Image 1 (cartoon, rainbow, N blue to C red):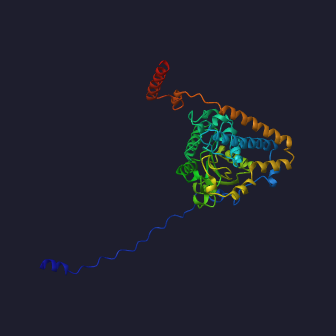
Image 2: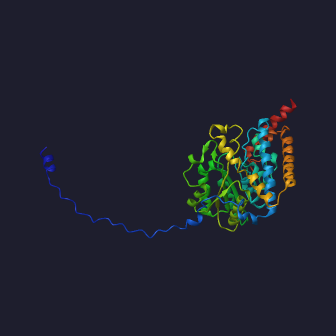
Length: 386
């Protein structure tokens, strides 16, 4: 006890004062690039209704108009097929046809289109058979088409997963020396996915020849854009990744085509990726299984009907003497012919071959897959002989 008391009463000398810490100032920091040129315009870029439309190619306008009319009829026919039980589901792009068509027409034959599940119209405008474009939504034969035939990647149902694939293909093409650009389409809801971030980040770091087209149609199913992001626009997100962002009126087919064509050309000459936001609106419900009246009012939809992409282009072409009643009639008749053929072919029951389960899985089948295919073939042969 005495020793403890003695130790506790011992006076401790204060420690020697240490010199004050003075950190070395860091080198002067400057951003690697000036963010100013990467920022999108304050308002969506437009051509229709402005002086810029005077320089638009009349042949391009006619082609855009024909594709828009055909696309509107395609959407209506596909929606009707769901009600007839010929399609399991259909996500309509009614009201968004301008962005869909412009995306397809902005690419060269050697380029690749990476669509989302809603972008069947873009695939058809690219040259894909309308029936094959709907086969996945019918529930048979894998993706429904050979992606290499028209260079259209499989329609991606998981949100934004096609974006890293587009970056990988574009980067690989550049490493091989191929003059190829990838255009990846995604909805505003897809920008909330991690795949979106990863794709844009890698694309900018690698300076990959890829263009990202965000069709901002106002809703991720029932979730409005304001509940997804606080960014001034989705195009502003480009700055954070080090690429330019462009904001365009998604219902102005000429404007979207011009912006995408410029972005594709920039990517092709080694300028790197671009993020394009097309401001549009989903007139129909998310799919035929959705009740849009639960989260938006009729007045909102009607306001966007007045900004219909077909009416906008039709009005401009008529005023310029590029389109007359005969031209309108010809476009409508061509669209109706397409719809009739689509309806007839989709009403025929598909011939399903169970062996297709093993087709188009690998370029060269694995040993395990060959064994499974042989087993199924033996079972099918036994059933046919019974």
